[in-house]
Length: 370
Image (cartoon, rainbow, N blue to C red):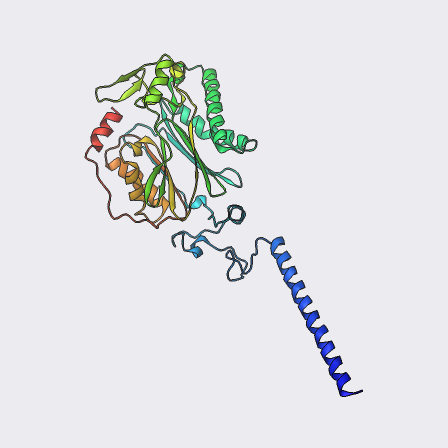
């Protein structure tokens, strides 16, 4: 065999070997892509698993969670929304409730994992006895959970749940045979967090919800009081009236300081309704530090920005809840003081160096609960 023929065969064999190697490499790449799609929990060489370990990347790895809170990423919502969304663990949520100078604590609160994708937070501030607040504390979550199974719109869910539980409470009190319970009622402020990013709040009465965004307080609720022009007009159109006490506080029919509540059935024909106002917010975890729910024992003695400033100085939400409830009492609140603090991605990123003090605190406090 001539040298020329040998060279030709060698070149031909080299070409086929290179071609076979290229095809093998492409096949391996295709298999690797398929493996990634079939195993979403192990996203090697991705931003969710940069070291290829297969362990969930924590939010702190992205430099957004404060290093005092270390939570994994919620992978399905992160893929759905196209950005990393941290898991909010109930173990990190802060809650506190103090009796203050009242004979009993009529405030109630709930924090729970309602479904796989929805967290439930609620505060109820009872008046005229704890019966209405107890009823909501026991059954509100169930009503909402049943509705979530049928309805995707969480604002619709909250509206239906509030109205249905009000009717159920009316039946419950009717069968009790105690006419004095017709004046029992409660505020209700409920927050639902779906997929760690969709926050929906519904409220009646004067318990509040606020969001701390870039260090500033964003109000998610507006108090239902007779001072509101739209609320006062509805009361008057329904046959009710508004009076003011010696300190200038407005009341429906001289009795109730709010225009919406669950219960208060003696005033239902005078315009007091259980239909909530709702609000939907898309969270931005790089800027949103926490959600706060409070009863009026806190929010009638501390303004929203002050609450944010105090919480921003705290190490964790549990410390923050305890500090706010105690501080409200120290500032002169005579009412039950209840608070829930839910941390988000920007927890600990906004530090406040000072808090303001209002010299009108004690006057407002004494007028509120006189």
